[in-house]
Image (cartoon, rainbow over the protein chains, first blue to last red):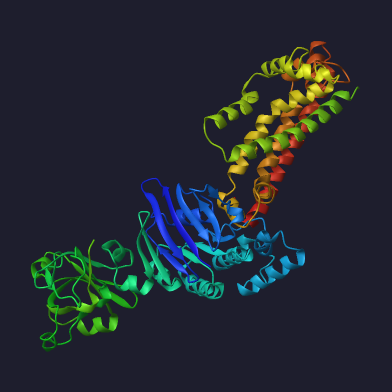
Length: 359
Length: 226
């Protein structure tokens, strides 16, 4: 089954203009809040009407502005998981799950509900009201309710954002399990790049209503096509850049000249490197043969439970003025070994970790 | 003592409340997904009886249902006259109570989380089913409060009823009208007795309403709505 979407819709401060195709592998849609992600899902579900375009699911045309087709939401057979679940508060878990099964004979309703209850690990909670469930249980109920209608596509709007951190990994596992057995187009909207990466196979990056990147997630994370995508996928170090005649690239903000693993295809306007790819050399002798090794000064640090973020500058004067241009991330163990060494240290921006971006 | 005003008042209010409940809900449901000047105008018309003096409402109804009025003529063709009959008390009470039902039903329906209605749509439910099984059960406490207010308002209706139905003892003489004519005829005892009955019914109704909303609040806490 394939979901093909090509829609345009005018929003408050930009136009949503998106075209993509989702197959049977889960697709993560990543974007900052207000990028149009939820609106995109709502258009596919039939809760909003695009101004123009076409949406097809398998062999059905759900929406086509030219042919004036607009199948109402209730006939689309698209399961939607809402951000705050939208469970019916006056119905029990079992009644919520069975809501979409009204046209089935009673025994079939009960059988399908029971099978979903067990698949989503809700056994024993059938007679509870949503209010009496934990966040994770509510989420699973909403998932079971959406799956009950055997939808031909599944849309999840920020499925983890309403959950406490400790519940997320558990719910994520449930979602992965669901995706693994679902085998139909599944779209997941999130503003969290790690969620997007873990739950999706394909990745679509949405920025101000447009597709900024679309493809295999590994490729997009390794080589973001634009600086915007780099930022949205969590890249902390992005500098304006220009190419030198000798094939090296000048990183203007970082004040260094860099060699790349392969010559950029287009004239680079930006260059980036992920924080955990910046390396610090153990001994001065190591430096001689390596490209892209620069003396650096640590301006300040910031700790997370297992790692430490170092804000650094390759320019001594700017470091002394308290200005950092680069962020590196290292494990605490390495930091313990390095912390008392005299500065400057030697930072390495490995050519294979750098990516040049034309815009 | 002649108890007919009590029976007429109760019968009138019950029928008027039932009609208002259905019409008010239908109007509120119709209005729910609409916006714009047309809908606002309809709003104004629906709420008008609440702000107009009852005598004006009564007079307009008289023009409408009178022998030469558009509806009056129509009814005359099937041999029915409304003016100065018991149905007239029902019509007057219904028209005057309708805005209360409309306003409370609309407010109650608007409070229902729109995501619930959208979720129901994606699950294949028709709009009628969504109204019946999602919107209405969740809006019901507000709707019921509106129903009780309507009943109380219908029970107290005087001006429009007098204009359209007159004062025919045993037929259109409701409690408020009985009180008015008792005072006019200087039958103070009778007037006081009917006042006591009216106060009694109203206190019982409002007490019941308070008790109901309290019980509902407890139930809704279980649903997680406040």
